[in-house]
Image (cartoon, one colour):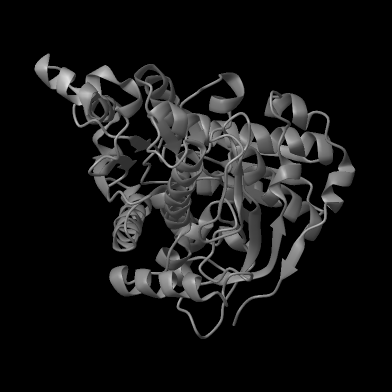
Length: 432
C-alpha cells in the first residue's frame, strides 16, 4: 500500500515502475494471416481463410487461447508482393499483431522471413514449402508448422519407386518460381541417386498463373515419357490436368502429382484413375487413421456444410498453425509461472513443441522446421463421390526423409542409399 501511495504521489504508474508487471493478459490475441483471396491460387487460399475463421470461432467459444480471445486480420497474397509486404509491416507496427501466419507462396516466404526477423514478430510459415529458408539462415522468430519440400517430394518419389519401379524416362512440368524449381531439384537429385539409369527427357517451367499448356502437352505427347511429374498446385495444376486429359496424355504416361489432393474435388472426373497423388503431409478428409475420430469427423462435416466442399490440405495446414498457437501459449504460460508471456518467451518455446490438429502429431525441431509425416496414394473412383479418392495409401515417416538439423537437403540427399526405398510405411486401402 505504501508503495502504491508513493507512486501515485509521484504521478508515476506501477506498470512503468515494475517491468515484471508489464506483461498483463491482453484483451485479445491478434493474428495476421496471409492467404490468397484473389487470383488463380484463391481456390487454394479461400478454403484456408474459411478454416481460419472456423478455428478462431471455435477457440473463442472455448474461452480463447489461455483465456484470451483471438482476432484475425487477413492480407491477400494475390495483391502482389509489394502490397503484401507493406500490409505485413502495417499489421505488425500499427495494428500490433502478436503472431503472423505467412505465407502460402514460397516466393513470399523468402521475403517475409527476414522481415519478420527484423520486426521481431513470431511468424508461422503455415503453408509455403521451400526448404531453403530454414536451411540457409537461422531465425529466432520464424517457424514452419508443417513439413518442407524435402519430405513432401521424397515421399511421392519413394511411392513411385515402390509401386512402379520399372520406368526409364521422366519429364517435369512445374511452375516457374521458388517452389517449382526447388521441388524439382530435390526430386531429380534424389532420382539420380536412387535410380541413376532414368533419363530426364523434358523440363518445363511455365510461368505462375499460366492458362495455356498446349505447348507442353504437345511436346509430352511426342516424347511419351514413362512418368510425368508436376508439383504445381491450385488453378495452374487444375488447368494443366484438364488440358492433358483432353488430349489423352494420361493414357501414355504415369502421372505423379504430389500436391493434387487439393485439386481432387475441383477436377472431378477430369483426373483419371491411377494417378499418384500427395497432400503435403498426412492431409486427407478420409484420413485412414482419423476417419473414426469424433472431433475429426465433426470438423469435416462442419467445413463441408459451410463451404460445400471437403477440407483440402491448406485447411489442414491452417489447423496446424492454430494448434501450434494454442500449444505454444500453453507451454509459455506454464513456463512463466502462469503469467502471460512476452513475445520473446513465446518464440523461445517453439523449438521442441509438439502439437496435433487433424492429422498425426507435428514436432518443431531446433531449427524451427516442422516434422510432418506424408500420406501418398493412387486415385480411384467409387460411387459415393463425384471425384477420385485415394487408394493404396502409404504414410511415410517424415523424420527419416529429412536431413539432420544443420545440414542442407542437397548434401544430405547425396548420401542416400537405394535401401531407403524399403523404408517402413503404414499402408491403407480406400475408405469406400
